[in-house]
Image (tube, rainbow, N blue to C red; front, side):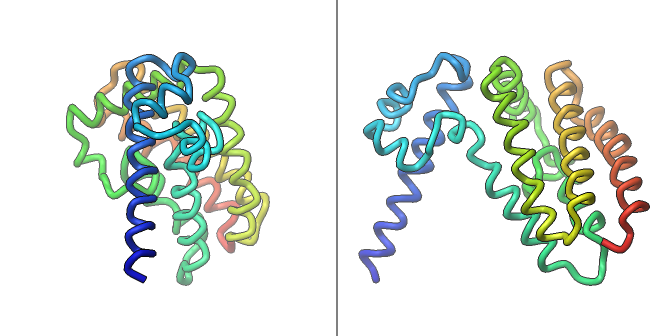
Length: 202
C-alpha cells in the first residue's frame, strides 16, 4: 500500500512537471513552435513518457479542461432542487477561470498578465483554436446526460463559447479585470437568464 501510494505520488509529480515545463515553453516560443521532444527534454523524461500522460501536444495546453467538465457534470448530478442553469451560474460568472477557486477580486496583475500570455498563445495557434472548438463540442453529450436535456446543453455550450470569446478579447485588448468581469457578468449573465427562462424545469 505504501509503495502504491509512493508510485501514485511520483506519477502525479511527473505529470505536473511535464505540464509545467510545456506551459513555460508554449508561453516563450508559441504553441506551434514547440515539439514534444523539447517538452520531454525540459521535463527530463522521454517523449514516450510525455505521450503516456498526454495523448497529443494539444492535450498539454488544454490540461485543465477535463477537470472543468468533471466539475460541471458533478455539480449537475448532485444539485439540490434548483435548475441546471442556476447550479452552473456561479462557476461560470464568479471568476475569470471556470470552476477555479479564484474570484474576480482575487485577480492580481501577475495572474492577469499570465492569463493574457496564455490567451495570446491560443489565439495565435490555428491548431489550438480548432481544438478549443472540438473540446466544447465534446461537452454536449456529458452535459446533456447530467442535466437531462440536450437542448439545454447545446445552449449552455453556446454561453461558454460566448464567455470564452469575451474573456479572450478582453485579455488581448488590454482590458483590466474589472472591465472584463463587468462584460462577462452582463453579457453572459443575460445569456444564462435566457436559458433559465427557457428551461426553468431542467
